[in-house]
Amino acid sequence: MKKVLFDTNIILDIALQREPFVEYSLKSVNLIDTKIIGYINILTLVNTFYFARKKTGIDKARKFIADLLTQFEVVNTTKATCVNALSSDFKDFEDAIQEFSAIDAEIEIIVTRNIKDFKNSRLQVFEPKELIKYFE
Image 1 (cartoon, rainbow, N blue to C red):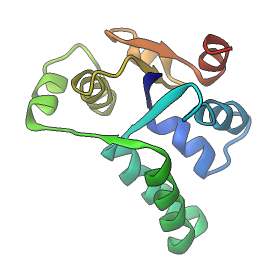
Image 2 (image 1 turned 30 degrees about the horizontal axis):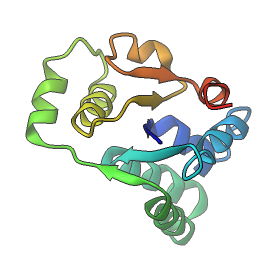
Image 3 (image 1 turned 30 degrees about the vertical axis):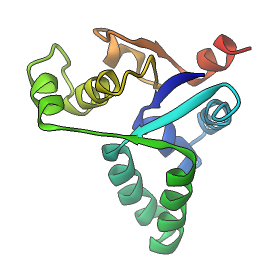
C-alpha cells in the first residue's frame, strides 16, 4: 500500500462539508486501509479543530479530530523539517511543512486541491479525483 499525505484543505472539505469538494475528498479518504495508508500533519489537526469548532461547536470538533486519529497516522514535524521548509522554494510555509514532513516519513503522494502550491514538490501530487482514478 502506498503512503499518502492528505493536505489540510481535503480534511477541511470533509469537516466543513464544503461543496462541491466534499464528495471527492471523502471518496479519496475512503481509499485508506484498502489501497493506501493515510497520513496527516499536526498542522492539519490544529487547523481543522480551529475551523470545525467555529462552525460545529467544540464537542463535534473534538469528535471529528478523534475520528481522524483513528483513521490516519500523524507525521512528525521536527526542527529539521521546519528548517528545510523555510529554505525551500515553496511560497507558503504551511505547504512546505506538509511537503518536508511527508518526505521525512517516506510518503509517496500528497493529495491536495491546490496542485499549483506543490509545483516544486518532489512527490507525486494529486487532486482527490485524480487519486481515485490512480487507484482504480
